[in-house]
Image 1: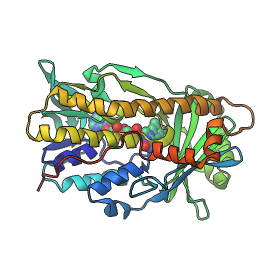
Image 2: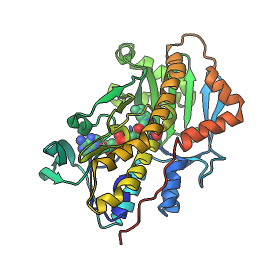
Image 3: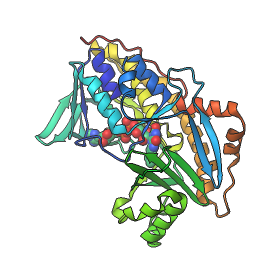
Length: 389
Ligand SMILES: Cc1cc2nc3c(=O)[nH]c(=O)nc-3n(C[C@H](O)[C@H](O)[C@H](O)COP(=O)(O)OP(=O)(O)OC[C@H]3O[C@@H](n4cnc5c(N)ncnc54)[C@H](O)[C@@H]3O)c2cc1C
């Protein structure tokens, strides 16, 4: 959506295809990072975005056993907004769609599911999709796969992928919020458990992290045992755990970390999770996907508008974004091994892992963590032209 908006703003005709009828998915992360807020500012739409309901989080904390530690500080970042805005992602996507529609070249088609690629002489020339009105073939100078970590497009394109593994999956469910509940989004680490609660106004969106492959064992212990576990992790919501009425209310989100060796083929570019599936660690995947979109627009808007796009242009996008992706994934994998796997495998009462104790003790390290999470490595700025009327 971000790339569609930026290209349409630069005078390129864009068609965004989304398979769902709306963006009301619960599984989306809700974080809009300082770097993304800076990009929205560069597009002149920051006040409009911040007028939508959201929470400011200037410092991230983690509760480990009975100890609460600050772990990342965004307040001194060299950007306009020294905080993460927590906003349901459907509001953010609707906002981007509204921004896009201000440009005549922008078209968003909902309930349009890409099912395959159109190819000629080894070059991708478009996509095939199903829509309520029947099959749709779209010819395009460039197809951009931004279809997430289960990307069908990258699969069909046969691009080679490197997989790094992840020790966990996440169970995703809702609990009602009540007057007197804390307002803040929370992360809690306890013996063998990690539990996240996102404030969604009238409900808590809960993430219950489990070791990969342990869902069947958890289900075998029964729903009541699961509810008791949730009540232990969020005592203030103990009276509401019965709202999880069955396993159908609990969705499994599989976590994967991987990266394409080559992000492009003639006529096709992958960005975001389609190019590099991100772990939820640090909540930075959306950030990286947006940065990819901005970099792609910076490098491709003019060649696309002038219809002189070459494979070298596509390779430049990979060259620009591969290093920040590698660094971020390396840190995520380190945290997965040193913190997540250790907590999930632990049987003893939990002490904060050394990495978190260091963050808790040293403000400078917290600012560094804030920089890595809030701005990322090699932050992008909007350089693509604003040519649309
Ligand atoms: C459990 C979990 C929690 C996470 N929490 C956070 C967080 O808090 N903060 C954060 O920054 N990151 C988080 N992440 C990572 C983050 O979700 C991703 O890195 C990010 O969403 C990638 O964005 P994207 O636009 O590339 O893909 P996605 O957000 O996955 O978007 C892909 C879009 O393509 C559509 N689509 C898919 N297939 C097709 C098709 N065939 N045709 C048409 N449309 C299609 C989908 O419906 C979707 O709208 C989390 C990941 C997991 C697994």
